[in-house]
Image (cartoon, rainbow, N blue to C red; front, side):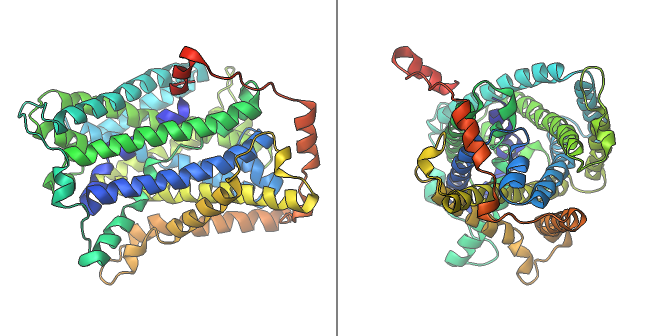
Length: 491
């Protein structure tokens, strides 16, 4: 549930309008479909590694065990970097502007205070808040799909049947250039926004140390989370492309507020009066929820790094209820970056944070593919067969290479528009590529500071992992029969 609500945030509810306006309905659906395939294959590779070595801070620990401790250090601090960027707080200020013209600074201040208060008492209080927001978000998704279906079939107040009209009008749009070249450039430009929409998909393995029967649980959770998210995401995107024209000028509104949200535009165009405000209220809880998750994740990652002596020992300090208050203060310290909304167009600031987050996500997916590739090389060198893995999928080795290579391509081309004559922007270039020197710098710093080594395949400790599998067998799942097949939706 946490992974599900972590993915469906402002990426699909707010920034998807820009994707539709840039590339058109067919281009948008194909972009989301391709990213679902790539993240799904990455999830399969991650599931195999996490089921063999279930551990908290999953990817960080896997990098240290299978690749190089310096990579684990780099990814740990990249995770902190990703969590201190107040993109969702910025988005929340954008959403509130739908109802009022008051300065975004007021709403940013209120949101920061509430988020800090939610995380200062205990993690149980945070869990209760997130559960309520999760139910709101799931209800919103189902509601939007049904409303979109009603609108496109002519059930709105204007009784206009839309069908696939907008697909027939202009399936693909052009950008900068004309013809097929322009259509491809438009499609590729939207990749960053689509990557942002799939953030949070790989959350499940980080809970490995806190679940019963972690090997089978994490393996099944990884697969089911992917299928549920992909189906919901693609159905939502398909409905969106049916109810809004890619040429609607409101999608490209320079106001940078929630009036340019595609669902709000579609429902307003259909003549429904009250629903847009209800949708924005639900989307606001979504942005708040994601910002809440960032401060929880960031403070816990700092605690985990401090445990391994990769961060100052001060981050080990906790309250009586176990809240890592120093880490909480550290993450909170960066929240005022959201005040950049006040001095410039809110849409621009949100786009900067979105690009930074997308690049950060791609690096994480590359590392997860690298973990699986390193595991396979080590197993081959040490004589282990794939049949000895506790859980496996036959195409996982291909999945790791395929998803890893494509994520590298997306990362290197994330800011390609800046290399087209007359389109260079320092803010766009920085937000697309800063993660590369940051990762390299963190890696080299720890490598030279600690003198770590890149592990050769025969040096990876596989014996202890496979021995633990033998010593701690887990019972298989019962076969799902009868009415219990419906539990596949949520179980």
